[in-house]
Image (cartoon, rainbow, N blue to C red; front, side):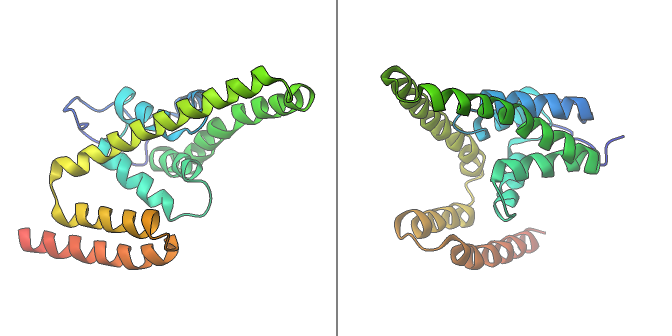
Length: 198
């Protein structure tokens, strides 16, 4: 039995799918990890939001934002948070195992092959092509994650997004210090705006 109910409707208005079981969590995250050479975020969002409708676009963005504050890789944090949201600790373990198990086996095999054949020019060109494709997919998912925020036309949220981008991406300020300022400001602004609207 799910710990919480799945959202009633997704961003497109379609009925949400029932909460995934342990097997579904393992298989879904295994598919994401196997498809996600160069980054799993693209495939995670596609599977969770667009294919299975387990979360809305906004819920995915909020959950992924939460995962930035947890220690460790963001996508690993997402698997644990997502799995535990629907199936508790067993769900977290199933999603985590699905995310890391198959790639671990493949990377181990590839490391052995690369140790023997890594100097081949053809292999170097293939790896360069894969990296360019991964960058393109990353830009595509960033754009998709940005759209719900832009549709709301919330000037505070957009202003905060731009300020954090400039602080971290342009000025190269340390992310922990930027978040230490941005997070309390964001919480306070959201609280005041909701209180004013109520």
